[in-house]
Image 1 (cartoon, rainbow, N blue to C red):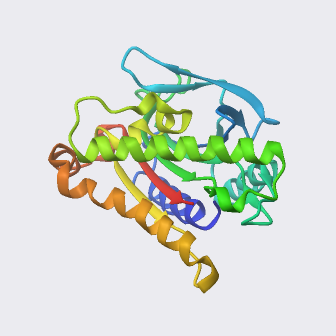
Image 2 (cartoon, one colour):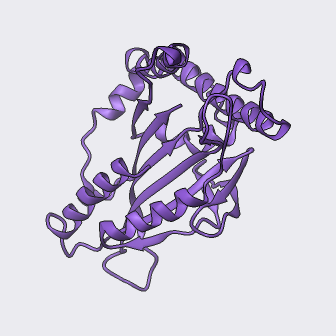
Length: 256
């Protein structure tokens, strides 16, 4: 959760300070996790959060703390603080396994008509989602009850995400985004004017061959979206102009 967000924020800040200078743009950072089907703010002492939908069916995270940032060092400190708070544990497959899905969001906002007294309006969002590692039954034999419960919850959310991807690929009328908290959060990353990238983390070790193949199969399913979902391709071909204040959620999803 450190190299990619830092590089992205560096580019965003450079554009804000040069190309779009004095146009009222501001950058905000938030960092939260989904653990056991519940949301926790990693930058506010793991405060429990609530998820709600507004009238436009946009998902809102109630109580999520946002920090306005002006340089990359501030963002780096916030990422380190959130990563240290994130839920981790030991499993049969990994000594230090992430037991939660972590979501880091970079929100670009703009002051309304240059008026600082009014709350700024969201014009773009870049989300980095680090998915928790999935667990096979063969890897959980030595684990305690709590670890098995965590693994079941992780696998359930990853399966829900896979079902949403399958439904999008088949152009189904109903997409089961409400199947888990993870898919609800990721809804705006897969529909509307958005772009999504999935990065798969694999191992060159022959002992991890099965894990590598499972991860690649999972990520390969996302690639098929560009083949079958023509409606999304039409949307993605539209031009994006930051000056027109179009909301564009962008995401980078890291596969387990």
